[in-house]
Length: 278
Image (cartoon, rainbow, N blue to C red; front, top):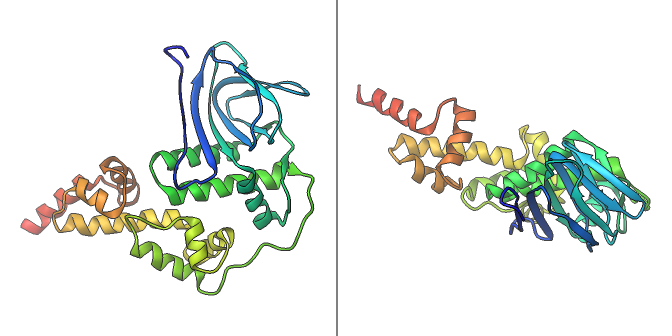
């Protein structure tokens, strides 16, 4: 790998059964190989070349690459300057579970790619990575499911359909909100919330958004900011408040606090202190 190339291949505990790769390659070439799971990649810069049994394909910035299990392929720079991308490698059982829940599909789905133009899917793939990098397991799991659901709905085919997706149990959304509020610093994941509320993950997502206007991870962020405000009002330092309410560090609190409150937490605390001292 050259000095300008960089790559991180990793996994997050909140995304069992999924590997992640974020990379920038210039001269690196992947020899022909196959995976026992799926390859789902969003090209974020340059051009990726993909060698497939049916011939070569190219994916430019904004393109999404979908490679099914056990399909031999290679990857290389498709243009001068190489390419950068974010990749998800979900196991077949992860994709099959989402297909069964959202599409009533049984068996191992296959995608009709291999290269598609779907900017929304590309943004969702990036969102999975960003949430995992921020150690936001609930958001990462939610975006993963939304990514797979979209790709399965628009770019898959070939296996039998079953019944309608399951509806949420009565009171599931309220119970999930209570669980999140009670565990701000260490919230349950989407699968845990679904199990605790006797419903399925997608049914819970639909019910929660219908009840509160936001998906669970977004509601949780707002609740953390409200809790941080209360701590700041008592004189707790922003860095301590950030960790107490469940943000990874103060920069993460700063970003979300500013988006919701309109000013950074330090400025908020200073102004409140001035008012109280008058």
